[in-house]
Image 1 (cartoon, rainbow over the protein chains, first blue to last red):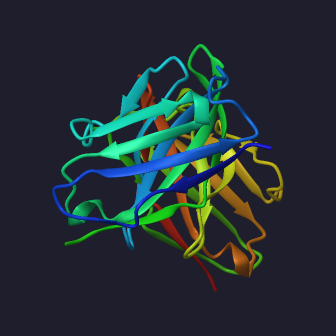
Image 2: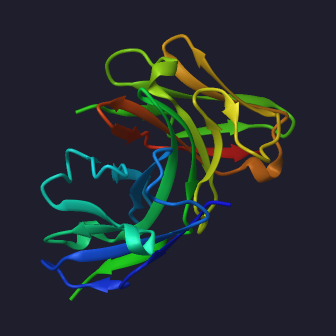
Length: 123
Length: 110
């Protein structure tokens, strides 16, 4: 059964880099049947799609975050990661990793989410 | 910049039926946008209710259904229960690997 678990520092200083890891179990991230992505939710606000990646290394990012975001994978550990540069208080949020089924030819299925991890940006 | 629109809030009586919608600031939503619907209660991760317009996720009661109504995606709850009181979000595949969430609808059951 596919499961995802986020990990990383809960506190990041302004202007520094936020780094989170998503550990995947039950499925190889080398699989061509999934996209792997990140979503965040600021306190009291809605969900925001950050970006995703495919096993080929192809990435897609929210245009509003694209200049600061990198999503990458460590195939040996079956993990993928999020890096967000130059953070400010506005980046304080619960960060979720998630998978989405991919059937090829731009067709998609359901998704599975991690439980989320809270990141606070503060000095 | 693509904006996905949802009603900020909605109210339904217990046992009643409610339809929440998910639209685009410009253009119509079709099944090609792969609309997904999520339910979220405070402090919890979102739960996937519906994917690819109208497919219920495993374990989701059949009183939740998804469709395209006019130019929007829709989530209908039939026979609303007290524990349906939650925030509901939709997400659309807008282009070239990009997904956009709606702002969410706060559903009250009273």
